[in-house]
Image (tube, rainbow, N blue to C red; front, top):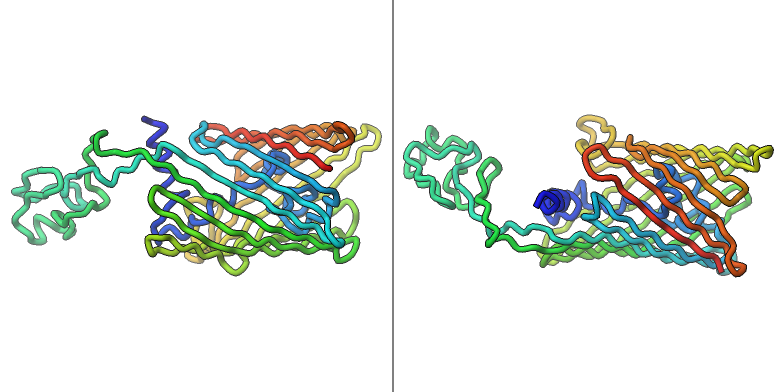
Length: 364
């Protein structure tokens, strides 16, 4: 039951269909792609040199000239929510194109719409002659003294009113978020590349569903071979989603900025990569963001990471994702003449269970 209630609370923010939830409408799009990047604390906007660049910075797709496919699976919050990612990329006429699918799925969500409640009003106390019957205040004196908030006996649930738990009135539902990214990257010159992603979003929560579209635009600049800067403007024009209930919600733009530095240690056949990102959002996420500027609607989250690539084969990673520690490891192999990557990432959380992510990629 504890897990079911936790999923229910998560869905209120992650899968909300209420128009007032605009500030969380795109939350599932912020999870990321690829265990390599996630093991580095999601500090990947300027690194972005594999197929997952379609998400982190599509300008980085120019680093994947061969045909490549990748997959990732993740269990979040103790297995309550699953997250899957599948992608394919290939070069055509000098540019690189990619298609990526993201899916978040949550089951066993408690639908409590049919529960009764004590219609006491938001103060949680019946009027002086209240009977205390479920769904009825029993209060016949509608004056400011016995009903100060004006919410007692109004026939609808208000914050502060007690729900009556009855398993017979609870149904268990599911929810999913899905996104298709169609991405493109082009090298302007040997130091500069540009890219973009168009995305189609489909969301389903119980009997409700929604469609939406959005665009990301990105640039990656490497003034020297060991240093890179990246900028990805996600949902650059805003992403609108329209529900079959008549409600619409939007995802505000996010500016994802990053810098990275490579330090080769030739003596140890190792390359060390340091990376840092900052995500600026403009949707009033004061409570869910790492930092925010009061009364402006502006918030920002930080990401830092380090990767040790030993003999171009073994990768060891550490990072911080919005203050939560991350770690990971990976292997680069050659199987039947095809490059294969296997990666694992771990994300800690103070209040919820740790998250484990596994991804694989193959070139052909």
